Image (cartoon, helix red, strand yellow):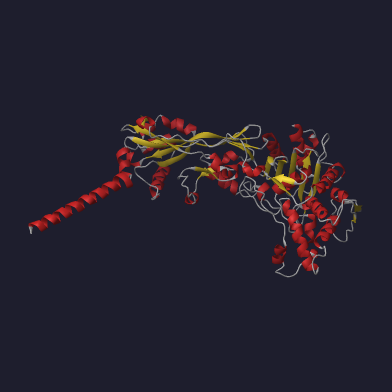
Length: 605
């Protein structure tokens, strides 16, 4: 009997011991709350936020840098003898605002902890910090967490640079690698978002000793457990900041875009979206209020027109039509077509032009006829199947110029544009038969064709290179290696023979020397090759379009300009493009009367 009781007692004793051991394991190893309670009085864990990488222009001019800001952190367990009136006086709060801060803090049930640092006030400026630093010891439990925010040397380039803000809950949920923590900053658009991995750096941690009043007394164990933050990599952009500023000046008060590219590399020299905004508005404690204000602007300054606006290309598309028709051998450079305006409307005093003359005078009838010959080559059993075969072949050539698909620029939110396919028309006509007479408006860049301004500039660069392009990109150097991403160094060839590009170049020079572009696009001392476009926009004024490159041989700049409601392409867009070319090549404005004309915006009346 006694032996049985003894065994039961031993079993109970062992079980109780096991329970205590398991509990102790959870306390010491699994659950760190008790360790935090024990250490929080003497050790403070301070996050070291990394410096985000700098952003410079192609000439090493600084564009984006870091400026200090501060968060006020609180450990609720350490708050004692709190003087709310004095606190409000130091941090410029009202008592209702202070109460709301405490209430909001405790409302964060998942994040709230009495023993961990919690953000109480965010994005204090250097002035705020200087004013409060000497009095912080009056408020036990509170301390300053230093970090940086973005600052800018210029008001230009806002849409391309993008902005940085606090990581959202959705972004945290999608962060499988667990890189970000609540309160971290992340690039939300533009270069800041696309190159987030290179720019962000890596956070570090410092452990600081504190006395009973919460005042820091130096590092814990001489920094044995500290980890240094690693700064992000700097970016060298391809942007010419002087040219960018000049472009934004010319686009002031207008809606549209300018995209300028160096044809030999695909590097973007200038990318202007009008209207724009000051990037400094989307930093600091007024970020939320300013973002709401900018996003509600009816002119949509956050809408990055060079990448996101999809327009009909207008007559600039005739250059692509010409080379495609030459490639398909349905015309030759000497082919003449009578401008019979009963077929389709046209403009200007011309009658029976060859290909070069048709481009120079932007003859609609010529390119209507050329496309009809491409579409209807007699390869099908009837006009409907013939049109399907012809359009499919046409699509392959047009797509090879970079139209109809994203080019792959190093910015988010790029749009595809639209080059219609047989499947597109099948859907548009509810699977009823269609033929050339249903789709002929695409011959002159109208109808279903849609392009984005970036594609227009890339097309100009492709002609300048006589048949190939590099994917347009904004960053030419990353970090110490100072090289772009590999995909931006690969050539992309069109399906068009290089010999056919010579015809296009000849014609584009004729446009500027003696055609529709001669009054506003012609420059002394340099051969400019260009093409005007006037895009229908009924019932509103037409859009003004111009593409160009210069010089003719060894081109240094290719450009597209799109001015919404700007009227004739030979006026607004051609003027702006020629001024940009002049500024880039000669570093000055030689034709002040053209600049005055653009700045006055008379073409918008």
